[in-house]
Image 1 (cartoon, protein in one colour):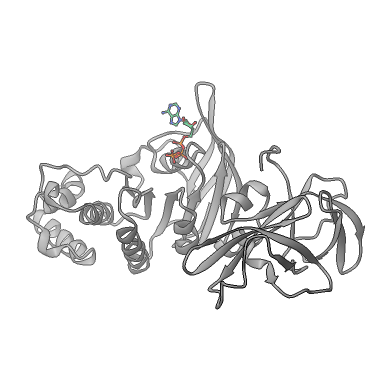
Image 2: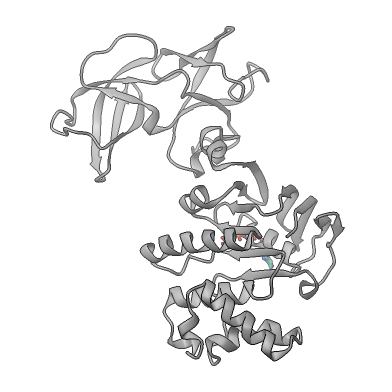
Length: 367
Ligand SMILES: Nc1ncnc2c1ncn2[C@@H]1O[C@H](COP(=O)(O)OP(=O)(O)OP(=O)(O)O)[C@@H](O)[C@H]1O
């Protein structure tokens, strides 16, 4: 097992800066995820850790050891590729044994180790099958077994579930987490799927355009996003343009620009906008944090609005509410009675002061 440290890492391909000024410390035994949209630099970073690419600038360390220019076969990392990269003409046993043969391990030890790892991934009865005769999920397990059998210090998984259907993906998530815990192995998982990242990871790094925007636990990333890119990439969120009114000891008073309404925002350490009154900030609140009532409400942070549209998703209803010139999305979980919620009817929304976040706005007006 090893920790991984990236110090000021940059990778360019010609004029393209695929990864820039990346500083990351991944702890021993951690399940760490690189999350971001297509082309943001996740795979390039993973490949620099595997040794398939060398950084243009910066240092890659495993523990204290400088690995920046060490070739992949000398790194003791196991990698699972998006397309599995198995040998289709070989059996399951031969695929998994391949890495051990290359390392000139004696054949009885190979047999034992392959048998053990196939048991772990629950494929021990498939040892003599050609991999071309396996289902997608089974091929995925072979790829995992092949990466684990060499007993790597670090396991690298590049979008390993993207070729599987939704149900199998769910099953394999649990399977991968079980294996990671059994082997207690430092693991990096690359995905663009936020649900996968939130549900599996100890910590997540969120990338966009070659830059890492935030590193944190799933809870921190969801509840305390570093900026509007992270906030809108992970889950759903309402953004509300505002003007700062007063900063008090406990609260910040703001005014919604289009709605000309006042709101209070609780001062909490993360949300503390000490930085500056004129920093480009945006007010945000998650749709499930807004309370909705069909009865008139009064009090702090209550806004009156009209239902614009409703969509029923089984466990939740998504409601768009027009409040003067702005539209807010509200998610109601498992409502007991839908008949009272009708298009065009009046509703009252409460935006709890401790659920509103003021976050730096880095994106264009598109958001
Ligand atoms: N070998 C290469 N040659 C030139 N450009 C490359 C190469 N590999 C990656 N890039 C560019 O670097 C940027 C980052 O690519 P990367 O594959 O790391 O993104 P990603 O986040 O893994 O995307 P995806 O989820 O689509 O796999 C992209 O703009 C990509 O076009």
